[in-house]
Image 1 (tube, rainbow, N blue to C red):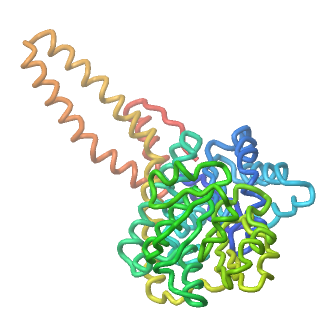
Image 2: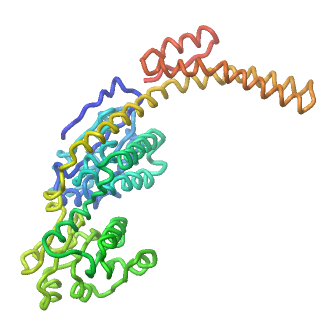
Image 3: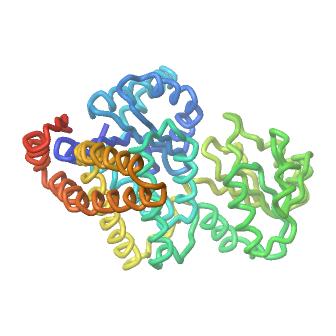
Length: 423
């Protein structure tokens, strides 16, 4: 386990921890092994009293849990214990490879991920959608704190995409793989392609093929979803996989729906007996294609590891610009979050003043006609809001400097308001 400390004790307003694996240390097979156990893992996380909220981000580049809770050590222990429990006995040492990010480091890491800076393909266009889908799927399990963090990550990711050349490149894992096919074999324009899978990444692949001029795109689904997919995409559903392979100029797989390969060596060998060349782009974590197929004459099997080896790295100043936006995003997030520590004090102060304002409004309603009473009510509330604005802002400023306790003591001395000191 590698830990990236982030000043947990100095950042009580950011009780966030991230644990996980990425393409930097793990193989696609490792990522597939843990991804296949996501459901039982989330069930264990949900049952842990140490966890207040969580979001699971699982892609072909990473498997990461973002956790919210009061104790860093208990969060990490609960998460890694859950990982070990869902893995088979012979694979439990995979938990020892998990990286841990704490507090500010966790914030910075997620913003880099959402910006495409930590992807296998730097500047990857799809990752921001994957981050959005992860927090959307988490729903109420994420809790307010993680929702705010993921919103900050999405905001920064959008800024990188729109304000830097990194986003303008629009690169993706699928795009790099298709580039390799065009560089090694033939232009994709006018070719017939077969796509295996109907999930979110199949949509990405279909769009990429269309932009490159593929005129005939077929889709096969082992779960029977090809017809439904074809209703909303410019593709033709196919039911006979062997025939579809035989007729295709290239195959792109992105299903990963089974631990067993969907396309075996025998199927390819039988389907290609009269065709000299078949590029296959396997984008699934678990491997949709039998690796032995790569030994067949004329078959060029390109998997995630090969894509990673050929991913472009010549971004130069674009990466620096993106990192600058990430740094500013982290600073803005921490600034806002640290001010939230003052919320209980501000709320108590406003409630204290509001009770007197509402009493006066009630007196006005008994004394005057409705129109006059409403005018008095608006005036009193406007005055109270104006008077409370400056002390509310000051409370947030003191929270950021660690001096909120003095403010809370002043509230107690002046108004008899007792506030439990946070953190």
